[in-house]
Image (cartoon, rainbow, N blue to C red; front, top):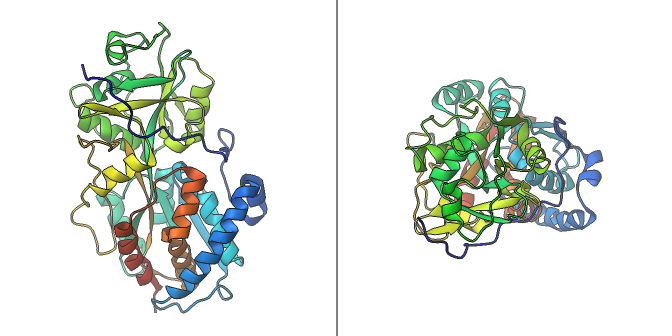
Amino acid sequence: MLPTVPLVGPPLPGNEVRAPPKGTGLKLSTRSRAVVLSTALTSTLALAACGAANESEASSGGGSGSSAASLSGDLVGVGATSQQSAMEAWQAGFEGEYPDVQFSYAPEGSGAGREQFINGSADFAGSDAALDEEELTAASERCAGGEVFELPNYISPIAVAFNVEGVDELNLSPATIAGIFSNTITTWNDPAIAAENPDATLPDTAITAVHRADDSGTTENFTDYLHQAAADVWTSEPDGEWPLPGGESAQGTSGVIEVVTNTPGAITYADASRAGDLGVAAVAVGQEFVAPSAEAAAAVVENSPAVEGRGEYDFAIEVNRLTEESGEYPIVLVSYHIGCIEYDDQSKADNVKAFMSYVISEDGQATASENAGNAQISDTLREQAQGAVDAITAAA
């Protein structure tokens, strides 16, 4: 039995900007921004946009020569629901600087984002998983010059969130988490859970394990963690689609959180910033239990290697799920923005370039973190991402 020690970092608080109801797609627009963002956030973003203006003007080279006055047209993103709250913040800052660009982001899931980027119906994708080899080939064919960028612009811990009456905190090992989600641990007073939580009063309530119904990068990251850290219990390969029968399912991050919130005894996995008032488990890392936090997520990503064999502007990361370092939280998602280095249309290239410039800027990252609770990218990640952004252009 692993000894219980103080948690490293507090669990992330609930996000102030609430997700839309289950099954509701989000199309962010200038008219709706006032509804989804609080007055305090809008004031903050107005200041951030001023900083973004200076930074954008300084880094707007790379062939477009565009300015705020000259940017217009559409900018369409589709993808990860995990980025929803951050995207609200990024949109507000971006539209403050480029009001003539008609921006939309539909949080339909990572799989939908990659698919729609590849087929050309989206200008960029938000995805909690990097492109696989087959998708990378297809994406290269979609892009004018064959070069694809994958920028790890959103980093956040995945919380194991639960609703158990009388229990606010839990310690869980990888094997126990795997047992719960593979339906071999079925009640909350199971000996495996009790052994890791000797001071908790655990009820005999049945466990309802809730997973994503859609093709989800969060699911792929979560099952990758279970596959690596609890291979004796979790025998399925990592996958964006839930691989096992049983349990309950719901669409998107907001869907699984809604089900767990309304179901005593339920548990799920979701972006930690969206856990709200649910209990959040600390997971075993080496000889301690570590709670999800932006700092712990950033720490494990900083010490994880890049995926080998990728292009010059492809910065996919192989997260170190087996870390035993103090203060690192291994159930982390690295959510990417995926796009072309070369677009067929100059306006698309200019708009993507300007948006990505804002997202990776210090102001953009700070504003998103304030709204979504995610970890800000490191200076190292920002520097390499800037190289890709500077290279974005249009076919001659």
